[in-house]
Length: 186
Ligand code: SF4
Ligand code: SF4
Image (cartoon, rainbow, N blue to C red):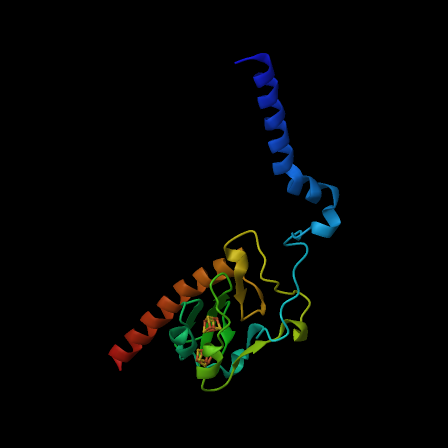
């Protein structure tokens, strides 16, 4: 390759790099005009006006029928409860004690089917702007557990809640055994 051809190739290569970088340089020089990202989760896009909102439960009205959980097409409602007695960390419902009632917003479709089937009408979806409590659930989290909402405390589901659910599970088994024994003796 001659000297002229060599420099011609070099020139063409530089031109093609500059042409390819035109878009990048444009974004680099005007970051404010062209910025399309948000500092999520610290900054969030506002939710659409017609967003159905997130769930809340009137615990004392719940009859623990599990219909909402069975209807959910993505299986994101988890309910644990007992009708055999009182649980130390339980929440009183209409005819027993609930120890867990969570919705997994990592999976929820916001289809509203769960609230429609609830016979006593105690499960609701509420627009985010109308939430009355301060500890706002904003759908963002850095852990898998963090995208679960505890409808019993109306807050994010925590590791402590998870521990309490496990304690209640053991309690429920004991209560069921006591009930069984009493039935056999009678
Ligand atoms: S809104 Fe739909 S997807 Fe979400 S918990 Fe209810 S039934 Fe399941
Ligand atoms: S359908 Fe209603 S009453 Fe039945 S478990 Fe769900 S919230 Fe409770």
